[in-house]
Length: 365
Length: 179
Image 1 (cartoon, one colour):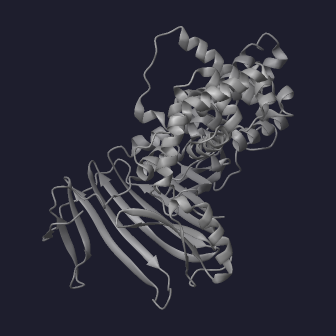
Image 2 (tube, helix red, strand yellow):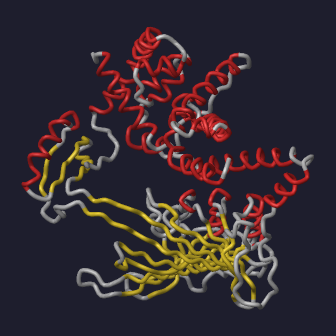
């Protein structure tokens, strides 16, 4: 039976453990900002009786409209500024308008290219693109992955196409004979391992809590675009399907380029992940239905420390093993993933046909 | 609020909102109410930033406890709500725990069954690591009451904590990473 002190210790540990995963969502901070803004507005309205103060309040309420103020075709322009010379933060309503207009423009169909480049401490670890076309419930994803040379394997490019037409999955991949052809997955249970990301979920990053500012203008394909840069991007959580969006990763930067109708045409973001690899790590081992903990160390130099740990965790049946392939020093990794997205095909019909001569295959999911 | 103080407050919110949300969640046992409570507490802190800026976290904590007590009083005057089981646990944590620890009962869930006063004492003493004296001062009760609440709460939580300890002994633990 545990003593009161032991219970207290256990309660303390357990509380911290259970609450560790509780993180405020962007909604919390966005909601706070909205409530603060409402309160500030109410304060300003109460000042109307005093003309000078009212004029100052009205000036403070001016937020530049997107794309306004500069004639089309005049090239890059300076961002609109407040009276202090700093670009103004877009209102929550304006940011939400951009998100909703963009969703509306791609509600039925669209073409999106997601390109990415991933680095680890500056060294390229991978790059590639997804060219996604969708029309209703039909999807097509042309996947290209450039794999850099590593451990004797030369650099190479992998390509594949995942296509869903009327709920049926088709794959354009190399078969057992290395010949690339279309396959039709005839497993009626579906295809749980194949997922085509919905690029429209990216508009969820357009959250007022990220405090967007106008950065300037540029032309793309004859359309004048206005850049909106998130000045508080760490408030955003990267979508799980984005390259490099591992647990603990954060959005380090985000810029979107929108047209005069508030529709996003381009998006670029950087996802950053700081990772530390310890020379001692623990593995959960399940053998014959019994779980135990294995403490893995790179050399005998760590044996004393590992044995002490094992003693502390004896109730978990901890064992120590030496893996010389592991680095003996703490390694810090700064992993960056630069993602650029191009949205297009607004309002255009996209045809995603059933591939001809697809070989039927019953997948195991 | 001026520009500098506004920036100070924003920095404080960015840096400490996660920790404060955890406290609010532990106090209420409900994620939605915790977020509402924290927003209101932060809003009040923003309005009194000049007074709060020296020790903003303590200020917010005090407001959170006060709001929590108001909420308890308000709840006592209205029909009881049944919390949805799925929304009760923090996202992510619930999945991980369910996956790794099976159907183990959580302490947060057990805290919900405690009387409000005992729950507040437990959160302040064992999550916020406040002393008996500080807890008594924050809650406006005597140190003796804090001790007796602590003792009664631990007695009530003993079964849950023993279950968790037993589950731990069976080796079902979160993925470790030694530091």
